[in-house]
Length: 157
Image (cartoon, rainbow, N blue to C red):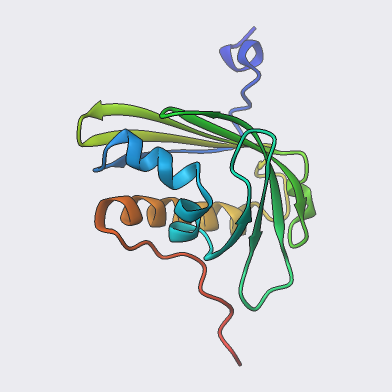
């Protein structure tokens, strides 16, 4: 049996490791609070980031809300969500997103992100892969420089 089979990790899930030049606690705050999430994913974030709470992500110009249930929040190391609703990509529903933050030094850390269930076989995979690459870079920029690049809306035509 492979390690993936014994741990329940599918090697085809979207996963990314990001080195971040900011303290672990600052990165944790950016993934575990609605204010932090607004700084790098979408300014239209609301709800409760407490365990058992639901966080709603809206996107300017789109009628495609995402609702995540907070399954775990262990300061300053990890946050886990389950996607309850994604109007734009219903194939996300039931998937699990995990953010694990490992301290490297007092001023840097590693973020291990996994979106379990987001696999190359899904029609949305390429778009979502590119989206996560963008937003994880936005998260790093937000905590390192104070300015991320959250979703700003759909350009008018």
